[in-house]
Structure formats: C-alpha cells, structure tokens
Image (cartoon, rainbow, N blue to C red):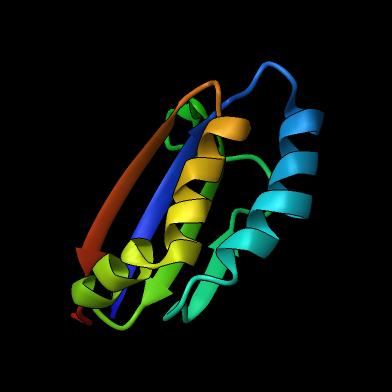
Length: 102
C-alpha cells in the first residue's frame, strides 16, 4: 500500500475551510481513480508538545506509489489537485510513501 498525507495549516476562517473542504473538495477527491480509503482527523491535531500548526490532516490510501502517480495524472486527480488553491490559502504540505508492516 501507499499513502498520500496532506497536512493543511490552520486557516483564518476554520468554518469556511471546513464547509468548502467537506462539501466540495472531499466529493471531488473521492472520484480519483484508484483511491482505496480517505481518512481525516477527528478533532484537533496535536503534537506531544501541545497544539500543532495543522487544522486538518487527510490520509489517502492507494495500492502503490505508481497508483498515486496514475491517479493524479487522471483528469479527476488534476481537478482535485487544482481545487486545493480554492480553500487552502493558509498552506498545505504533502508527503507520499509506500508502507510496510513491521
């Protein structure tokens, strides 16, 4: 399996961010081919030292890194990636990686 982790910085208007994210962005993202699961944090994001700079963290699961590449090369993936600029003005960080059990 492979994961795409998307970390959204705290927006100036959290309610507007959440409204757009859950009502427009998530439905769009769920059309991405090869997406196996889509999870987000339930409640505030924290660190061992206290609050984090992130408002929302999304974890998307695919079969492989190649599947992530193919997904974002698709028209649905391109539309989803382009949509991030519509609501993530505070900033966003992304990381992709293969996973293995240990």
